[in-house]
Length: 580
Ligand code: GTP
Ligand code: MN
Image (cartoon, rainbow, N blue to C red):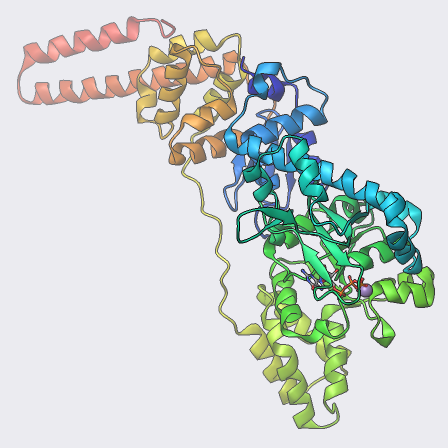
């Protein structure tokens, strides 16, 4: 067994996946949930404990435990292997440390970031960190927060981190690709972060992959500077603090989204741990999906001005598109969450979050402020204002129901305007399409395949018997049988995933639909033999029908000798015992 197989055999795919998708529901040996790889309302994502395989019947994501971790973390095969081994305390033999180049490069990037975090923290705690520590104290950041967010300080030398990483043996091209340095015209590097308060940015599993640096001098022209994008840091994939927020978010089924680093720290100190920040980027589908795995209930707590602006509108549209339930947190006085907590206290802030209005009601309130409800023209204007947001909903029934809700929320019970509004909400071309249906299936194929996959012991016997019949050549699953036989002949281990990997896409789907859907109990060698028996009987019956037909023709044409010979064959056939 190679190292990957060895690691895999010690893992349970259900457990690994449930770390990422906390809401797996169990149906026998199958587990199901909303697919983490595409947007849907009813679960078509399944994890099969028996086959250690996952498959989404909506977007066709599928594979084994490694494929899952690679896709969801966006990492290479070797990284997934290493990660799973580490997380589960499984030893990796020395020679398996050799890996592909990409993985090594990413490993170096991660190492540089670990070193940089420690370096910056040392600066903040050291003698030159006094001013920055005072700044943090002044802004109400308590020592435990400095510790848990691993805040640090970049000095003003412009080369301290560069020297340190050079000493640790990193090459110039590795440094140049770390996102931590700038390059002068003469090609030499310098520290990107100078005299800044440093916020490490973590990936979802809590490893540092980048930094945000806040200016300490008010004269600095950029308030914040970020690492440039690297092989391990894609701005649009990361949400600040998701690595820490996700546990609480899953537990209380709520995520609060704020603008920046300081807001995250302020909110966390106020007891709102389920908080993430977008950090000045436009919200992306990748970020929404990462978040959605932990909770579908999002409380937007963005700066008061920006909730109405174009970027926020786009974000809301994306969120609704992804079926996220959005509420809007309103803080009076135009304060950001961090300032609000300081001014009004943790208790009040938590109350504001608890009282956040569903997005459409919040929007209706804004409309009410703009237009006059008592005037027919005003009512029309209100609906025109609300319509684009409602039309952003994918589902027609939901659009109509939201339209009705809003009408009654606004106190508009009837009339032409309401009718018009309902109609406009309903009319919108539907883009949803049903997932493709799978090919026709024969129960015998299902049972035989299950027994071939399950019966380690009796597989030899089954394959032997399978060779003795030819009926399966006409089966839609013929390609699958052929592959099993050839795998068996070449001595490869036969398991769902290894078989699946070798099939053509059409056969992959057929295999999945035959084998994965079954909820029944264990399938034995005997069950499989019975299917082969049935194939044999069918073959025999069809040969007999064939002979009888020929006999009739021969008799009709007066070829008695030929008819006699055929009858002899037919008699012989029925004498042969069924089990050969
Ligand atoms: P404080 O001003 O220290 O309270 O920080 P803040 O987080 O409240 O800042 P602000 O509300 O101005 O911005 C929100 C987030 O946008 C910040 O946390 C940053 O992530 C990002 N941001 C703000 N200004 C800049 C900038 O000049 N450059 C970059 N790259 N990002 C910025
Ligand atoms: Mn702020």
